[in-house]
Each structure stands twice: as structure tokens, then as C-alpha cells.
Length: 281
Image 1 (cartoon, rainbow, N blue to C red):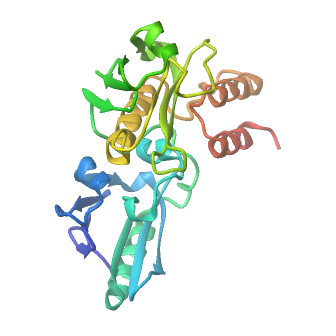
Image 2 (tube, helix red, strand yellow):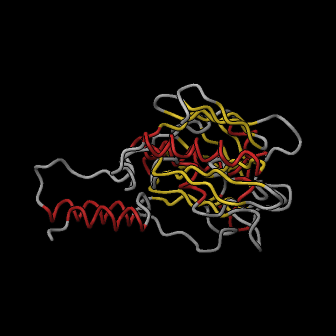
């Protein structure tokens, strides 16, 4: 059984077991995913995890994976399942002869987890890179200072729609969500804000609240931490999966959940779980 301070070293990362968290340090090297370099050391509170398991990997390896709770890590919320396995920061690959060590680590984690912690977290629990941040997309330079997201259009990359409209500025008070589509997907990706009470163009290259990625622009290790930082700042303004205090009626609570879901601040899974909790049986 692992104890506080025990360390497990795998491919490109070291996990350290602490009393109330797991500290993940990523190796510096050419083979380490660039996203891990960008993130730096990550402390994952145990309350941000719902489980841990060990499975067989390829080429005589085993894979230890800690399972983050929905709504606990803004990075994983922004990624929305689009990360490749090799870039997953909750995944540690070890030689097969270390399977017993991986199993012991996973068992120790599971023993420390709250058995009721498999539901959505009520707030973000894992830190992400903090602003100010800059992102160079194909059609814009995007900035975030902690309170406002700005788009400065590229003369050569932006469509005439964006160029004629001029640079854009979105205070967080005017934004309800963030959409990140991986640049590794066929057709490229984009970063899109969801403005409050504003209809946007479905085409990212015409949407004044979106920046388009391209070859050499908006790489995962640059654009995903940026999206996560904006999402975390939005979550700090409106806690993830927040619900009214016990005073309001059940109808008020359900109405509030519906508003958060419609605004993009709750995933479908979080909305379903919370709705079930506040719906009379």
C-alpha cells in the first residue's frame, strides 16, 4: 500500500502520493508531450478524482489512469474528450514489470477517495495556467488578461467579415461559455466564446467571437491551456454546477440548472446528474 510521499515514475512523468492530493511532475524532454510542458507540475486534489485503474498497454506496458470528476478540472472540461491518449495528463505509462507498483498506487488512491465523489464537482478544483495569456491563431492574436478576451485580426488570415468589423473585445461579464475544437481534428479547429444574448455566425472564420486554428497556429499545447484559463475564470464568476441555497423551491432550482446548462456552464452529464438530485422521486 502506498503511503504519503511515495513516488511512482513512469514515461515522461512522476506521480507523488500526498495526504490530500497527487502531485504530477512532467519530465523535460523532446518526447514529453508539449502540452505537459505547457502545464508544468499539477497538484490534483483527491476530491477532484472519482477513481483510478490499471490496464494493459501496448509494447509490454501498463497504464495507470486517475479519473477526474466531471467539472473538477477546467482543462479536461475544455478538452471535452478531444485529447489524444498520449497527451492525457491523468495517464501514466509504465513498464509491465511495474504493474504491481501501479496497482498499489491505484488501490491507495481509491482507498482515499470519497465513495460519493463520482458525481460532478460543484466548482473547479484543479489549477490551470493563469493569465495574462496570449494565443496566436491563424486569423487572430487572442489575449486574455483575466477579465477580458480580445481578438486582434490578422490582415492576411482573417476573412473580410472579421477585418471589416475590426478588433473585438469581450469582458467575461458578456460571456457564458468557451468552445475549443482541437486543431488535430480533420479540417482544423477553433476557439470560440459564447457571448451572452448575442447571435453568432456558425462559421468560425466569420464569427467575431472565434479564432481559427491552422497549420502552425493554435496548437493543442497553446490553445487548450488558454481555453481552460478562460473557462476557469468564468467558473470563478459562476461556480460549476452551482445551485440555489435550500430556500428556493424545487422548480427554482431546476430552472437555475436549466439556465446554466443552456449557457454552456454545465455539460450534459452534469446537468442530468444534478437534475436527478433535485427532482422529487
